[in-house]
Amino acid sequence: MAAIIDGKQISKDIKEELKKEVAELKAAGKNCALAVIQVGNDPASSVYVGNKKKACEYIGIESVAYELPEETTQEELLGIIDKLNNDPAIHGILCQLPLPKHINEDEVIQAISPKKDVDGFHPQNVGALVIGQQGFVSCTPAGIIQLLKRSNVEIAGKNCVVIGRSNIVGKPMSLLMLRENATVTICHSKTANLKEVCKQADILIVAIGKPQMIGADYVKEGAVVIDVGIHRDSENKLCGDVKYDEVFPIASAITPVPGGVGPMTIAMLMNNCVEAMKMYS
Ligand code: NAD
Image (cartoon, rainbow, N blue to C red; front, side, top):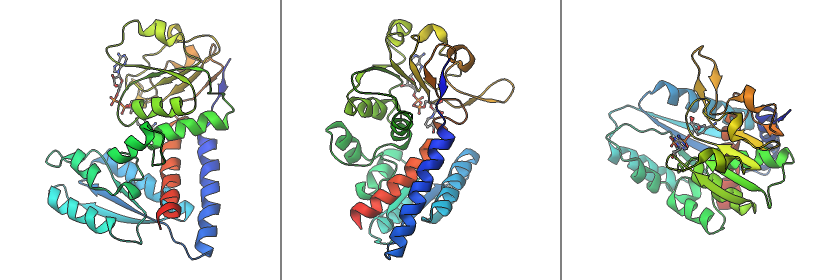
């Protein structure tokens, strides 16, 4: 039977640590501010943006909101980003994705100063991760490293299988596990013998985006299983990429959905904002 890796509690611990640190920085006259840009009013994006603002408020980070209409042009958006890049009172810039179709996301990501890229999406920060230099790391994979470390899961020397190779989750996750000295295998939609490969994993990280695809037949007895997926099942209940009830009895530790990986993403975003302020202001 698995230990449950409690992302809700771990994210709470991180937020408390940050709150204390931000208060100390404030007492020393240093204010931390995050610019949050949303273009259009996609309902899911509005929920994410709202949660990020709430977390800022709780920790004591100032959030400066830019709620731009759907028809905002790319030039207008790039103009705002340029202004924020040059504003010393702003430490982090977050542009909520997805952007409307007429805006090129890659160009927007590249326009954000790497020193204020608290999402860790800028090619310079991705490159820094690849060659082991300091930089901002994508928040969800960075959160998973915290989940593992704070749950005392040993990573060095372990076989880690990551399913998924997206730029936001799978690829940075694999690089972070490599940095922690795991032996890493990356699986994707074209991987042959997925089950056999997954069965080799001491740590199995699942970021496929397919509801409850991974059952007990993919998991080695005693493996640690991290489920990144978030979906609604036929009864409208949240579920992950893993069949939790099937895998729970054979894993040594597992993240639930909800309450596992999900809460860590915002906690790490807040952490990146505080780091940006400490490093570059
Ligand atoms: P994505 O769709 O960009 O990538 C999915 C990856 O899974 C791809 O690389 C693909 O090759 C691989 N894949 C697809 N079908 C496969 C199959 N049958 N066998 C093996 N590999 C397969 O998704 P993403 O952005 O990486 O997100 C993955 C999941 O994590 C989604 O459910 C998403 O909602 C969730 N997510 C959660 C958080 C969080 O904060 N908890 C953050 C980001 C993403």
